[in-house]
Image (cartoon, rainbow, N blue to C red; front, top):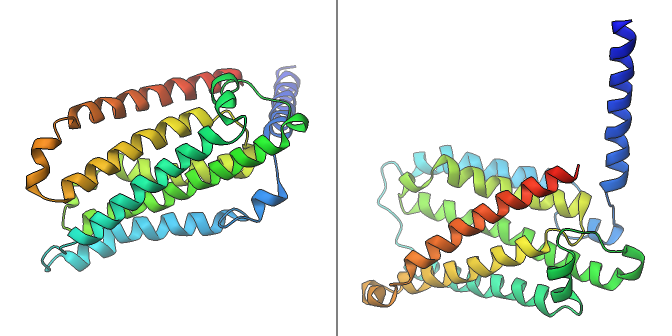
Amino acid sequence: MANTTDSHFIVEAKNQFFNLLEKELVFDDEVDSWFLMKSPMPVFSIVAVYLLFILKIGPDMMKNRQPFRLKHIMLVYNLFQTTYNAFILYWLFFTPGGLSSLWNHSCHPIERSKNTFLLQELNKGSWYFFFSKVIDLLDTIFFVLRKKQSQVTFLHVYHHSNMVITCWAYLRFIKGEQATLPGAINSFIHTIMYFYYFLAALGPQMQPYLWWKRYLTRMQIVNSICNCFTLVYWTSLF
């Protein structure tokens, strides 16, 4: 009797799981055709090479070397990141219907058949956001090349690796507007953050003008808390 009950429970659980997958997974040939989106192998390869370099190859290479002086490279990189994240924010806010979607549909699905243009544009914005997380991996590489290995913490590495994989998986398999608001908030904070890094990289003479750093730190903490609440809410829907 117990075996029969257990078997029935397993079958029901399996059916519910596959029904959930069928309901939630969304595939799109256009998205699949975009750079890095067709297969998980390129993304996993990027993350694997990233981990290998920052944890093994990079530290070994820099062991008996002086830190690289990357001031001009860092200036260009931080300015690019500032501009790119501002572009993502602009895309999400100024896509026709995008602002309304940010506010009204971040926790509720919209009818795909009636909003194909909006969803296509949000998917593009999601790809730009995903690719920004690939670019963010350079943060850690620069730490290694500048011999700032103490900043290559477990939390830092986990966050950067996880964001690349999670953003790819969301756009590849789920899509939708639910992650648009967290993505917009993240891009807003990264715009300010990289602008701060750009100013700081100009030299010590900029320090008197960077008094607002403490507010940036608070914004990052609030963003992390909001992301946790969002994840808990999404989980509760299942």
